[in-house]
Amino acid sequence: MAKPVRHTFDTRAALASALAGTIAAQLEDAIETRGSATLAVSGGTTPARMFDVLSRAEIDWSRVTATLVDERFVPPDSPRSNAKLVREKLLQNEAGQADFLPLYSPAPSAEEAASTADNALHQLTEPFDVVVLGMGADGHTASFFPDAAELETLLDPHTQRLVAAVNAPSAGEPRLTLTLPPIASARFLALHIEGAEKKTALDAALAAKSRLPIRRVIDAAQSPVEIFWAE
Ligand code: 6PG
Image (cartoon, rainbow, N blue to C red; front, side, top):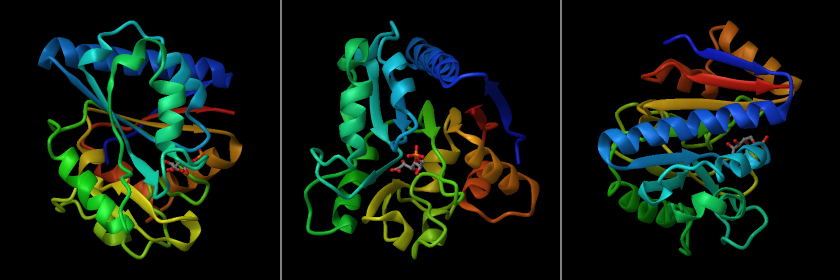
């Protein structure tokens, strides 16, 4: 395991500013080096403040393609939609010029939507320049829920799939998620967590011979995971 790098902040606002600045710098470097940049972000409730700061970064967003680390299998106008969160909080201001590749599409099943998203993401250049993970107190990240029926397939380092469907009782609705390889190969891989409960859960996952999904992602990461945490 490449030892994770911890960044601790006194306030969530300071974390948002620092993480947004770091992401913007990574994207700008990718644009300067390779002419374009790719960004995959998680949803949930944690990232909104950081997205708002990042949306104001003065980089050439017209050369950035953004997508999601994972998505609930719900329409884009659902309050549960991560695409809705990204469109409202990230793809505004300067970042409104970025291309966005959602994972959800109307399909009879999450599996069929995942296949459509998988085909679409295979059109992007790999590896992702930036991937931003969140984490649940149960140690899940992306939609790698510990009780997911497909967990070992999702965490298979040799899978050719970039996007897969997830059915986990603890997840609420069916999910669509990046698999382990596109996450682990990211040039810059950040974990954004807030609050004491998640810090305790992360410390436990890092300390013991844990098999929690977050630990397996950190162990598989090709570059040190940059952990951004505030109380
Ligand atoms: C999702 C996220 C998920 C999230 C964690 C933390 O779709 O819910 O992508 O992986 O990062 O569940 O969620 P919170 O930020 O809401 O605590």
